[in-house]
Length: 358
Image (cartoon, rainbow, N blue to C red; front, side, top):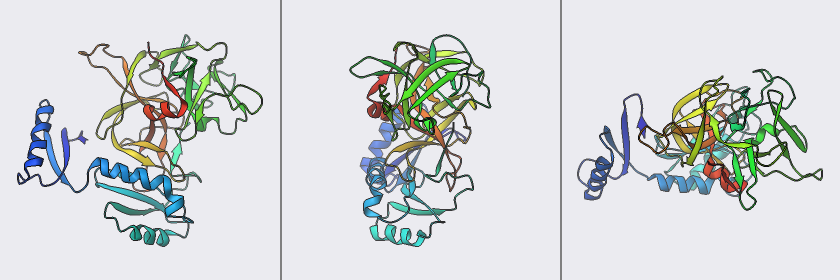
């Protein structure tokens, strides 16, 4: 875990770090060799990341089986606590029942954390989704503001942000994208515009139209081009709310705790933060998101790219490595305010498409 305030990389190891374990000392030597001059701090923990991630993967999606009849909980694998944390709202009358159910599991790896929902917490979960505006003409890069109306886009009528662009497996059809929750209330067909210019369309197929791939679990919908299947560019906007700078997308990275990534949102601008947890589960869902330390993300950022840029000594300096697409922020409880996004690796598996690359 990278602690930016102290500029220290914390390495968590299962076992004593006082020199008494040859296996741990060997792991420490390997970490120092790979640290490339970074300041390292070794911390002894009881459980490994893999063990806790596997536990969260098993318990959160199956709550309806082992906690039948109870309000579904949110939660996460928390690297700092070195535990899997269950977040249970305390206004449904089943807090004690939840406490009893967790106790019955008899598992020290699990922490029970009741919380009081914020007044604006959505009815269907702890994550408050956030629904950018960009009026730069040209090919459709990701990261553009989206509106449902053929109007001049402004901060008052822009609902969401376009995400990375994609190429469907098998067909080679190119698509734009945004957060799937942005389509809510739009019916069977939703048309998306950027400053009076048609960007793309989402269709369920229920009205006889050709359906567009989407995933509720990954909170992602692809967007078909208005005029052809080749209207999208393998790039995204990177910068502040009014940027016209776009960068080519060159690859994909999986999330890791302590990793520094950036949100390029037109409402929030370019926000750099570190990953707090790679597995955060909302209430009532069998899908996970990535939790950030920052709370700088705003309504209108939904769908926006989370990314890093390549360094001066890499093959394509300044170009983008894709990490995920923005979903929202945690509305209540001990992790309230933390921004949430969905990994592109997970999105790809759900919509059966790969990122559009040069």
